[in-house]
Image 1 (cartoon, rainbow, N blue to C red):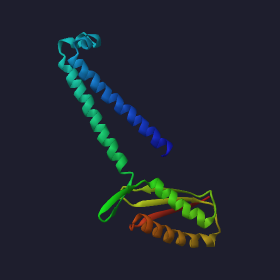
Image 2 (tube, rainbow, N blue to C red):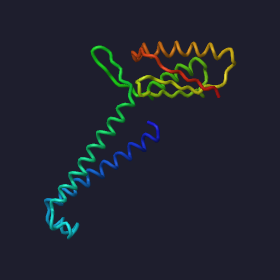
Image 3 (spheres, helix red, strand yellow):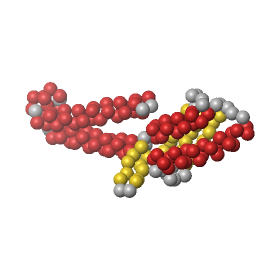
Image 4 (cartoon, one colour):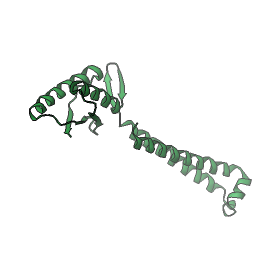
Amino acid sequence: MRPHHLFFSILTLVLLVFLFGMSFLTTGAYFAKNLRYLLSDAMQNSPSIFLYISSAFFLLGVFLLIGFTSLQKNRFLKIKIKPHSFSVNPAILSYSIQTIMRKHLQDSSISVEVILLPSKKLEVISYLPDIEEDAKETFVNWAKEEISSHLQKKYSYFKDFSLVLYYQ
């Protein structure tokens, strides 16, 4: 998990815990008369406002929970193999493609990033050490064929993908 994904997950968790906590607090204030006195003398005359506030917090929490879950679900590649389907994290694909490229070029400075585009198409971005001009075309052809066959064999991914190579 990348650090900014971890931060976003923690922020999401804290926000949802806060919203659900406020929902339970205001629901408890509706039923506990002494708690209502402590919270506010102004709201004492209409305790039903606590029920409305708790409902609003709860609905907002449910809405955010569904929204965050659906956002996270789109970050995985769903692969269907009859009769089952499964999801693969692009980080796993990055690691396996990076291993293939490192083995071929025998260089550990290669890094690979796989991005799942909104059209469910993969984009493979690779940062490579600089190689000779005539070897670049050969390597591009090898990489397209090798990555394509690897994705087909190991992950049953038969769609087209984009390959972006940056030479450093």
